[in-house]
Structures are given as structure tokens and as C-alpha cells.
Length: 457
RNA sequence: GUGGUUGUAGUUCAGUUGGUUAGAACGCCUGAUUGUGGUUCAGGAGGUCGUGGGUUCGAGUCCCAUCUUCCACCCCA
Image (cartoon, rainbow, N blue to C red; front, side, top):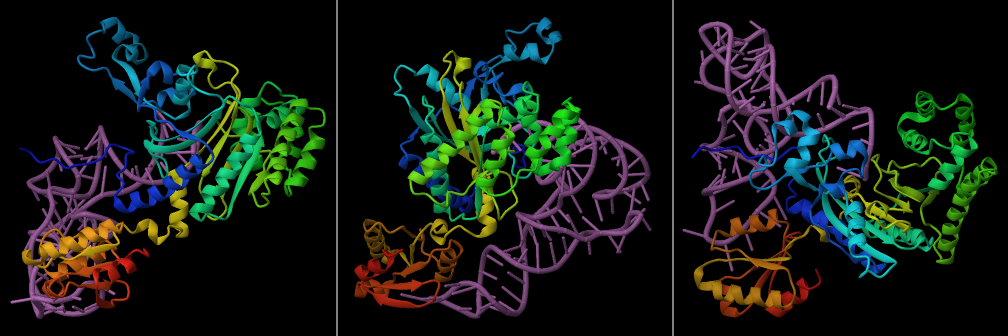
């Protein structure tokens, strides 16, 4: 048998115990918050029919889909003609399924397929991996988790407010304090295109403006020029690029700039309504920063859009989302309004790691290790172990008699805070020796006294 | 998809114009210490130099291909 060196496919990762403990800490903060706000879990399969996936993410997105070959002899149905016609023609003969690219499209598919059983407004959350055949780089992988929550079937702005509340709650649980929830509205952006006389170029404006952080005002102006925006329009845009101040000042400025753009004013009043709701809820420090130049790439957004940025760590957005008017239209169920958002676990992880925000409880796996001296004392050690577990203390026994040094070392490496030494002396006296690994102190006490101390962890 | 970049021990990295047996630190294992981890000391194991070709008397070093890593675009989380 020949040896082979193991390796991972491009852009794929293992998560060892350390990383899993930290990731689960994040996942559980997100999950409990979603559930607290009345969102129900949904899981969809890792594969969807290609007909469901293609055409939903643009040409670029279609290229990034992982396609799965048909089972069996996948060339059986093909002919030389298909081959000559090129890969695009050949593709649908050899592949009918693909790995899902995001959670939103499968969600829309699910809603349409189950519309008669669902009660609307339907609120669901979904925490699952998705796959993209992208070229990987830092913070971008070919397999990554998305944590989405959507409510579909209502256009109430209470949903927007609740998203802000959930973001506040999750970041509060995680200990992230210095962040902004940037909020804008596609209607405001539409109003801007109206005001500058380029009403038919909303999506071009969005993709350029979205890069403002990266390429600066001049960069945006140059890019709009190359996208054939009239120079008068670009001049008219400048005052919008220069909007500054706190939320009230920005609102005041943009209101005068958009005085004649109906949809723009509508977007502004929607934003004000959200602030209003938050005030009624008694939330003062909601972290909202109105940003009329926030655009977001995704084309299906039609109303409120939002994005969360850390002010401590320079990294992409930690969370983002928006309102859409017609997510399910492509599957034959038009005119249903909804809003969704999602957390970027990998980026949140990076922020928490660099700021050292993971609490110790999130990292400790086992609270107590019971030592194993020799076969003769194993029954007593097992009795101790069983009592610890009955008291809900995370505990384990070293599975074989070994040198104490080795067992202590095991506890140390595994970050186990307490070791219970249970040997011949302890067995005879029916006691345990409890050692605190941080202080190095140890005492001989009864099992129930030991449990009392350990139960506090 | 475009243009770069990277790969040597478990990990981070040295390795001279191509020249004997490829090194270090940390980590790991054993012992000093037969019931005590982190510190110290002594010893030890561990490498098809990413993979496949090529040039050469000779390749970790040069050339080609391929995979991988990271970065900038495109796009996005």
C-alpha cells in the first residue's frame, strides 16, 4: 500500500477543539437571540437543483457555484454534439445538482413550496454552511457558515427595529462594544439617482458607491464617469458624498437635497420611523449610524439596508441585511415583502480573537479530571466520577493507569482546572484529594465537599 | 476569471555563486522525580526539501508543469 500525504481541498478548513469551542460560543449567542425573538429554525439540504440556483446570483455567481456530477455513468446521456457545443451546453447533461451558494435562495424555494402550510408572517433562522468556488484569500473561504434570520410576509418596520435589537443583543452577549450599525434605504439611493437625473442607473450607482470606503470620493467619481454618468450628474452627486455629522444633521441635509425626489423622502421617513420605534422601546444607545452612502451589492434589496462595522478592528462587515419586495417572485409567488439579515461568524471570530473577548468558560471543556493510579483503585475512581457526573459536573477519568506526571500533564494541556487524585489512600479513607491546577493547592476532602466546590464552575 | 506571492521537522523559520551526512528555536517523547502539571537539567525521536518532469558529474538551490498558501483586482461573507 502506498502512503499518501493527506491534505484539504482549496479553501476548506478543519476546526479543532479550541476553535470549535470559540465558534460554538458565537453560534449559541446568535441562536438563542434568534429564538428569543420568535424565529424558528430551518435547515435545507446542502444540495439544490441547479435550476433553483442558477440565474439568481448573476453571471458571476453562476460561475462560483459548485456543481455535482450526476451519479453513475454521467457521460451516458451526452453526445459528441454536446461536447462540441462547449461546457455550458454540456453542463446540464452531466450535472443537475449544486451545493448551495447562500441560505436566502433555498429559503425562498422552501417558502414557495410550503406556502399553504406556513403561517405568515413567517420568521425563520438558518445556521448552515454554504459553498462558493471563489478564489480564497484571507477571511474568504470556499466553505463557510451563514447565520441568517428572515421574516417574510410583512412590510412592517417593526421588523427593522427588531433586527437592530437583535444585533445589539448578540454583540452585547459577545462583549463587542465599539461598533456601528450603518443604515440606509434603497429608496433614498433611488431618490439620489432621481435628484441627479440618472434615475435608470440605480444598480450602477450602488456598486460604485459601495466602494466609497475603499477607493474614496475621487475613486467613486472616476468610476461613475467610466460608467457613463453625465458630468452634471456627477457634480450633483458631490453634495451627497460630502454629507457629514450625527444622524440628525445628516438627515436634515439629505432632506433638503432630496426635497423633490418622492421615493427619497419615503426612504427617509421609513428610517425615521425605525428610530421612532427604537425610542418607544426605550433604546438609547442602539449604535445606529445613518449612512446615505451605504449601498450593499445585492440587487434584490428594495428598502432598508444595513451593515455592521467594528470600530476597533479593520475588517469587512460583521453583519448585514436588508428588505426585499420580491424574493419569491422568481419561483412564482410575487409581491411578498420580507427582510433578512445575517451574521458573519468568521469575521466576528477574528474581531473577538484580536480583542481577546472570548471568556474562559467558553474555552474550558472539562472541569475535573479523575486520576487513575492502578487497577485496584479503579472501582473507587469510577464511583467518584459517577457522582461528579450525577452532579452535572463536566468530568473525565484518565482511561488507563499511568504515571501521575503524565496525567497531570494531560490536565494541564487540556486546560482542566481541577484534578481529583484518587488512589489507595483516598480509597481507604473514602476521601478525594482535590487539586486546583491554577493555584497548585490541594486538600483532602469528602466527595460531596469536592462536588460543592466544583459545582461553582 | 486577471495579475502577483508562497511551500524545507508537529509549528515558526535558516540553508552562501548549484558541491560531503539539510540546521535552529519552540513543541513532542524518555529520564533526573515509582503519588503531583507549568520551571530547570540531561538524553532521544522526528524530513521522499509540496508533487511530477527537466538541466547538470552533482539540485533544497536553476528551468517547466501542477497543486497549495497568502495578497491585489472582479465579486462577496
